[in-house]
Image (cartoon, rainbow, N blue to C red; front, side):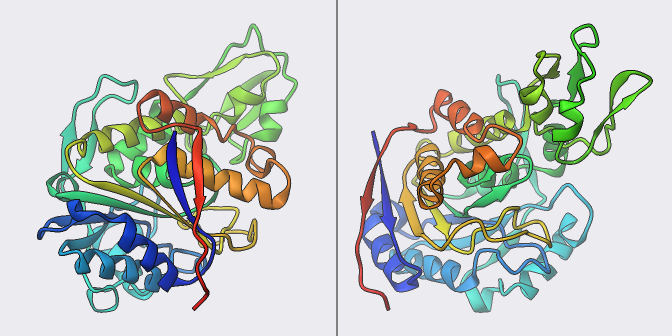
Length: 343
């Protein structure tokens, strides 16, 4: 059973104090440490705050490390689809070398990493592979396609190329309808979050351009008439995350989830929706599965219900269960609550 440290406060100082105790000497010795994060879409006011990121960077530097922030261009249109456009958005959102205290890197220099998993080979940033260690810093929130916008998604979608993102969204999860089983009940049409399904000429049809591969249609179909061609997006996220982390088996890794200012939708959406819960604090762990499960549990406990299972049309546990099967950690964990004075 893995330990998840819980710092129940919004205090950046309290986070730093716990990180100083959690980050071992493995991160020191002039090692170059990639800090993987999402720097937010321009117009979204609920992304991970630069002062939090800056304090994490300071702690790493105090340990002797040479950290740098890392993310990749996005699949969809907009300024963050290019390196220069993303850097401009990062600057507008407060992420610069001057404000954070380390280099800010948006990478489109990829290396192909082979894999026997269903996702196949993926393209990973060269700078990530060359790093001496990895800190995954995640703003936890909801997500319209994956239900959980946590550490696994930060790794599985944020650490791959645009082409790999496209395959994960558009090719491998493509829904296939068994028209002999289908009764045209329209459950899939009603529950599709992006309205990619429709009844045309007495048959369910798919709009390929709209579909993002979440797999909701297959999960809600009462007849079991729809399945992904290869795997749904949540399964592919976990597979991609496992491939990325496999490159760090001999290097130090640490996962930090920030449970503050949590919203219904992703930081990549300029309209992130309403806040889903009151601020909870920070989690620190050595397992991506355990930290995402603990994050989900803390939100659900505060709300007194299975928020993620009820709010989104997909099962939020899928990426965690696949992650566990791929060696990313356990679903059972010990939550260690650290009480510190607010400052």
